[in-house]
Length: 112
Image (cartoon, rainbow, N blue to C red; front, side):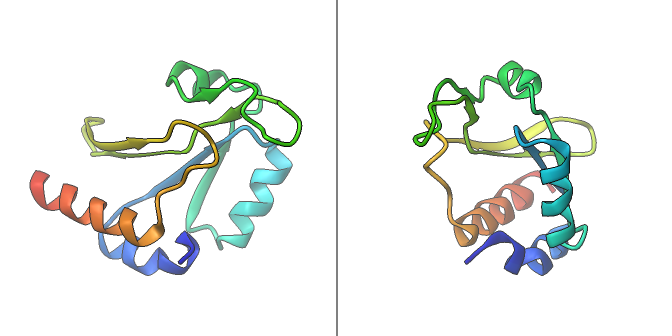
């Protein structure tokens, strides 16, 4: 199931979703509109933030060999402490939405 279909579950966990993408701002704006504002999209088209987090998959785009962001999920609390994370080896590997909700729920219970 796609993440946008699980927005209510994320809201019930009191989770704010931020997506950092190498897409241009006009493309991230389209995605934010599609998600009805439930996800905040941040454009990092130069990949500076993504690279600083160690998440740049050099030449990882299977279609044109461009750099892409590795898929990652992080749970950060209001004190800016990293509580949980999951990084993939490349941009083609993704965690399922159901698995994400389950892991976030468990992490939140541990730290509450």
